[in-house]
Image (cartoon, rainbow, N blue to C red; front, side):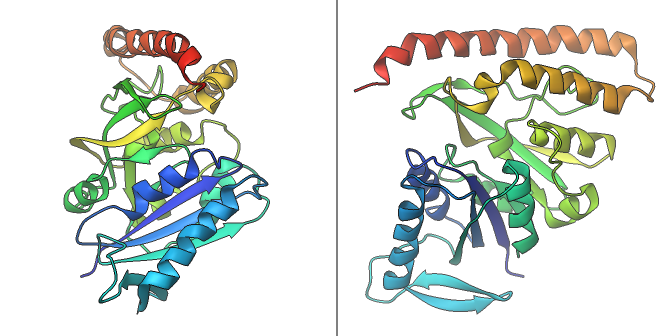
Length: 294
C-alpha cells in the first residue's frame, strides 16, 4: 500500500524564511508520496512569489501522475531530478483566515495522506525526517522526535528539551517540539481539529490527546529545527502563553485525581531539564542579536 504523508504549512508574511521551509519539505527522501499544502493568510510580501516559483519549477521539470484524487509531480526522464520521493503533490491557497489553527484545519480537511504533520513557515525539517516517520509510525497514533532550536539565521543553538508527554510532565509545560510531532489520519479524526481558542493550540492538542489516552511513540532522532528569535510567537507573547498554560491546566486537571507525589517529582525533573535550557536559549539569543544584522 502506498504511503502518503500530508504536510501543511500555515503562512503569513514570512518571505524571509519560507523558501528554506519549502525546500526542507520537498527535498525529503524516502519511499512515500508527499502531499504538501501551503495555507497562506493573504501575504503581501514576497511569500506568494516564492510559493509560485516552486510551482513553476514542478510544472516545467516534472510529469503529473494521478493518485488518491491528486496529481503528484514525478521526475521527468532526461531532466534533473526534482524530488527524492515517489511523487509530490504541491498545493497552495492564499486567503484570509482566522489564525494559524484555522489555516491548519482548512489544510487538513484537504489532506489525502494517512500521516499528518505541520511545519510553520519559519521552521525546518532535517533531511531524513519524513523517512524516519514513515518507517516508525506503524500503529501509533502520534510519533515525536527530537528537535533543535535555531536562531534567525538558521544557526543551531541547542536541543529542544523534549520529554515523554504525560499528565505529569504536561502539568507544567509542553515538552514536545511541534514541528517534530506527526500523527495519523485516524488520530486527527478521533482527537478532533485544532482549537482556535488558544495561541498555544498545538499544546492544547497534544494535551487533549494525552487525556484521550491516545498513544505516543518516540523516535530517538532529530526530526526538525524550530526557529527562535525575539519576534516569534513563543517569545513575543511569553506572558500570554504562560496564562494559557494555566487555563489548560484548569481545563484538563480540574476533575481528575492525580498523584501529588509524582507531580512534585515531575516538577523537579521538568524544571531541571527544561528551565535551564530555556534560560540558556534566551542568553544565546541576546548574545547573538547583534550578529543577526549583516
